[in-house]
Amino acid sequence: MILSIDLASEVPIYQQLRDQIVEAIAEGVLTAGSSLPATRTLAADFGINFHTVNKAYDLLRQQGLIRLNRKSGAVVTAAVTDPMVPSDWAAKVRTLLAEAVARGIPPDEVLRTCSSMLDSFGAKQREDTP
Image 1 (cartoon, helix red, strand yellow):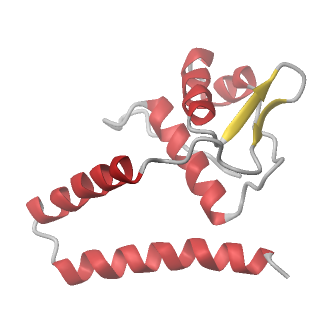
Image 2 (image 1 turned 45 degrees about the horizontal axis):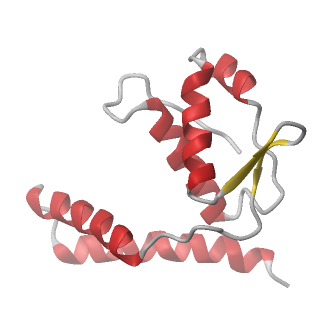
């Protein structure tokens, strides 16, 4: 898994890390039992404070996507223990769609992009299943 951060982005670094790890899980790059780098190691690699990485990992833990253990570190969970409430998910999607409308992106382009992204996640998962 290759992570990258944009120090000039308006998106906080911890959120960038969290989002990229979620995408790696959705794409099948990270599977149940996959270990994530230690917070201090990842922080040193990016030249950022380890508390920033810790915050990203803690968000993932709260969302049930990883478990944290003193011995094994951060590990992707086999099953989400705290599934996202549909209304929370819908609120996030609504905001993203509102942004697309506000920026003048045509609805058919939005739908094509969403469909393409969903297909790419599914394709990775289908490749891994026998």
